[in-house]
Length: 378
Ligand code: HEM
Image (tube, rainbow, N blue to C red):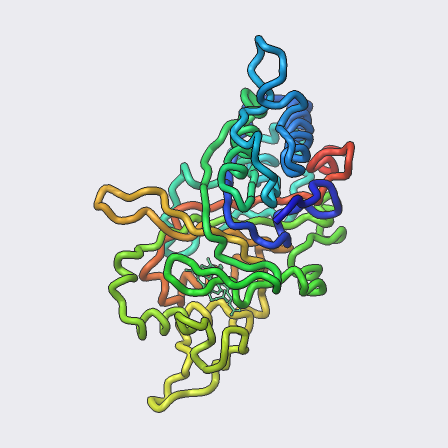
């Protein structure tokens, strides 16, 4: 990984080949004016553009600014390359209108219709302090220190204007977003990302990832919608299941990652063929079957999540799971129906619990001299 452009038609960090590490943060905006919000986005844009190109967050850098002022960069990435750093910004529903209907920034009428409030899904166990946010920043890099440096400096720049509501570190990308990448594995030990949308599928990406000018919010054209879900995995229980049970629940083999109906990793699954016991070779309640577009009116998403281990809980179990991120043009017809189907029918649910959630409108890329989300304020 080298250096990805910051300015352009789309924000980087969506169809960009998924990097190895993540630091994701959701922010609450303080009691500031609309002009101050714009200034924050302008300051963030300049700093993000610099950092993604391998530079410091500010013009002086960590070690050469005015001696009696705090440095305009914190310094821990001074000698490190960008390592594929991308910084992707998003706007939560509460930026447009708070839960009690307050329109703090005069933005309510500009809220994109696709930026819905996610419904409560069966078995959701969402924790308020892991959910929501007015703004989000997704920093991805192949070097964890570079991703953390990006979030730390953007938080520092936001001081007094926005503060971190929740954040998540992730490792081991659980998706591939280009055909050049090999498929990585999640903490259940299975390949994850096999049937993902890939950057090379340009027609599908245009149809299913990017917002279009006539989708109800012209300022979002070229942007996308991000859904995040912090999914805890009860891996100790999972680890005691037989290989047969694990493969049945996923619908794929653990080694090769091929569908249980036969063939290698990228073979299309066959849901019709039955085995000796007359049961389908791929269980109808397996994750593969329930998540598949054939069983969701053709709905597809671009998955871009990460593994996490946040230490352990007080019973000594690993506090581990998957920080799920997906991008799409319209969550109401993509993430929501797939997740509703999964929440009702996926046998894998026995081993997972959704504890955090977020939905954000990710505006198109900025042009040089402009700032992220400028179309919203015009
Ligand atoms: C496929 C794991 C959550 C949507 C897969 C695959 C695995 C997997 C192993 C098969 C390989 C692949 O095609 O990528 C998991 C785990 C999850 C999780 C461990 C939670 C801890 C979710 C959620 C959604 C989702 C929340 C969406 C709401 C999909 C889709 C596919 C898939 C759309 C591709 C299905 C196909 O077209 O074949 N997942 N997943 N997954 N998953 Fe998940």
